[in-house]
Length: 251
Picture (cartoon, rainbow, N blue to C red):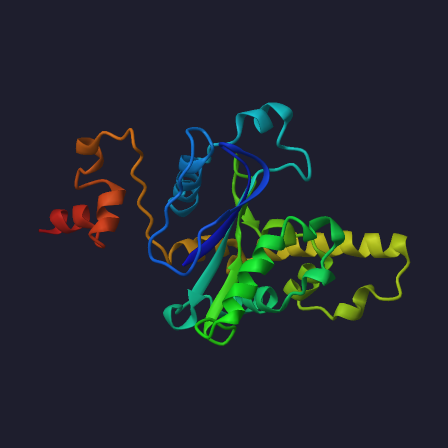
């Protein structure tokens, strides 16, 4: 399940925002005045899970979203039962082991505020007996570079030193004893190594592998019901859990 959503510069949301989804109930409702961002949440998930164009925030777009550090991103928090995952287990293990174990105080001070909701959710999970690192994957993973070819992105954790070292499977002592200049150069080197590793076929499609575990159908309030419910639409095929159009052709 998806239990939370980090997003930046998407539709009604400018800057980094966190949207809670929850894990306790099978029904979630968002209530608020018009324009506060209810449909933005649903549309963002539709764009992410169904590989549709992202509705970028117009104000952020006019300010410029291509400068380093200001790029839009979407990154859900996934809580996935391990027994339901058949492929890509090694990649899921690498990510999940980090997100189950990372300590907030070990993060760079600049990202502790933007990640606080993640730690609050994880604490809630750990207080119960239903979820643990042994039974479930806990992963924060989404996409950046939304106007072009999307690339895997791990929200504010993406460029943190601890995450880089964990992801690249290097010893944490690699940065100890370095001067500030040397340390900055080493972190830059690690970022480039991460970028290179994410181009490997095992990691390049990690976001799509996560998407493939879900079926998401979005019914906009202004939709033409007759056209939307045609049997050949992707949404209707998902509802019936089979490729009906292909099946009909075969028949």
